[in-house]
Image (cartoon, rainbow, N blue to C red; front, side, top):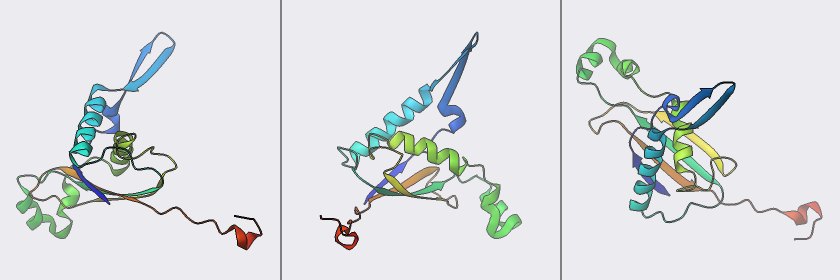
Length: 152
């Protein structure tokens, strides 16, 4: 299993840019996106990842928003759900950007090989805004052809 701690990704709204010239629209990856992907690459190299994991993977994402300075006041006022008042990137936006940044670096692709994706928004803590990823290879299923009358 690989565990990575990354900075909070840019929103999908910032990740892609679209320009319109006349009747033609062109969508491209923004500078912020390229910078984030490059940073993810360096974090992966520092973690010892030299090649993307081949095959099926399971990814667990924990999003930690930044803890506001007035968090103690919010706890007193709102109780156990105080962190619902903390601003954070949407989980679906975060997942798309994270998977795109991991593609070709930690995982081969963000399509079929990602067989399981679990994401949680965590309670802000003293360690600041970040994303903790756990990437695990899933064993390939063994096809039991002999049960179907097919020679192995």
